[in-house]
Each structure stands twice: as structure tokens, then as C-alpha cells.
Length: 209
Image (cartoon, rainbow, N blue to C red; front, side):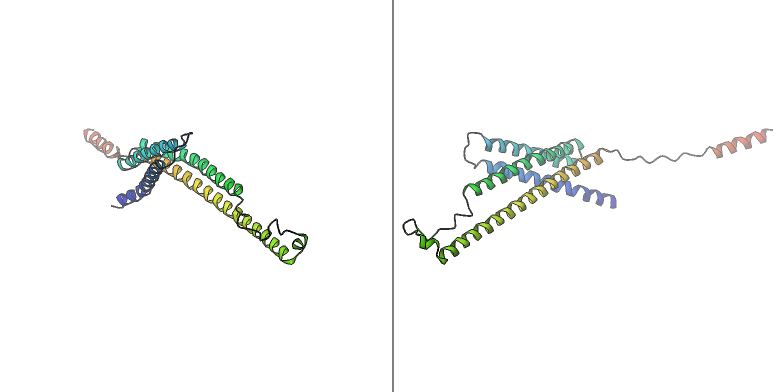
């Protein structure tokens, strides 16, 4: 009973990983159908990759249930390859958003000066109100840039954590497949000692003499 319970607990985690991978890739494949048409066929490439990942995840789940190490090894290799592919995609997406923020100059769009070119004169430039407003605008831009930098650092940290976690899952699935491939140690059969047989032969020889 204890061995059966340990076996169920050891397979529950790989089964959960395979199910989550299958659901995630299926959702990505379905969502790619609603992407706009692009001349580079990026959406189609992502969709094909996601459906291939769904198939490999389903095969890995079947291998875990039926205890077939070959299917589990294939699923582990897919997780390892997907670790690098997903990391590259996340870096590109993150770089795209960073460049979009800089191109739109998001830290300066919220400032609209009250002075127009028609009323912009020397006395306005030297006035206290203009200097205060200009100082507020400078502080606002600095706080906005600091906030954007902090958000970028957090996103990079999350990206690194996700990549490391997925790589560890791939290694663990590979180890699980190797443990399943390893043959169970066969208990040695106890060998009967030849001493009693020798004693009986010696006693027979003495009787004959």
C-alpha cells in the first residue's frame, strides 16, 4: 500500500505539468486564430508551434499514464527546447513594448504647457509661475522614467524566473523518464549452503568404513 501511494505521489506532479502544458499550448493555438493577417505569417508560425506543443504534451501525458519512458523523454525534450524558444519570444515582446514606450514619449505626453507661442514673452520666462511649472514638468518626467525603469527590471526578473522554472521542469521530467527506464533491482535468491550435503556424505562414508 505504501509503495502504491508513493508511486501515485511521484506521478501526480508530472501529470500536472503535462496537463498544464497541454492547456497552455492549446489556448495559444486557439488565440492565434484571432490575430490579424500579417505578411510574415508570424501568427501562423506561432499557431503551428503551439499545436505541435499540444500534441507533444498529450503524448507526454499518455506516456506518464501508460509508463512509457520514450514518450516522457520526448515531452521533456520539448519542454527544454520550448524554454529557449519562449525566452527569446518574451525578450522580443519586452523589447517591443520598451521601444513603444520610448517612441510615444509616454513620460512627456501628460504635460501640456499653459503658455502658447502667442503669449510667450520674456516676462513669462522669468516669472515664478513658469519656473514652478517647468520644475514640476522636469520632476514628473524623472519620476516617470524611474517608474518605467523599475517596471522593466521587474519584467526582466519575471522573465528570468519563468525561464529557470521551465528549464527545471524539463530536467525533472527527463529524470522521471530515466527513473522509469531504470530496471528494478532483482532480489537475489538465497543459495542453500552445501554444508549439510557434505555432512551427510561424510556420515555415509564413516558408516561404510
